[in-house]
Amino acid sequence: MSEITIEKNHFIGYEYKEINVSRSMESVYTDGYHHFGWKLDGTAHSSHGANKVVLKFKRDRKLPNKIEVTRLQRQ
Image (cartoon, rainbow, N blue to C red):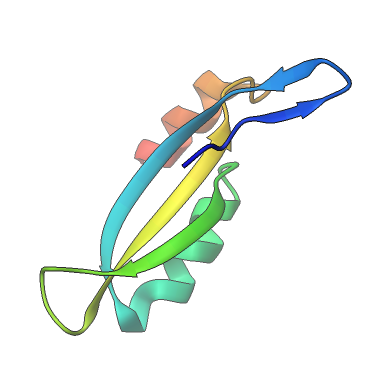
């Protein structure tokens, strides 16, 4: 899985996150993580049950105000 984007000799590095959530909360997590700079990269079936799904997110490592965004995300 190559997730490297090169535009005019500019490298964009990504950090990745995978979370297990129930299917009924999938849209809530997708919308919530979007506000912290995460983009939905894909979904997969979870091994934790039929009503669970794995959400795969990616985010640019050079996010402006990353320290503050990370702090707010933890709350």
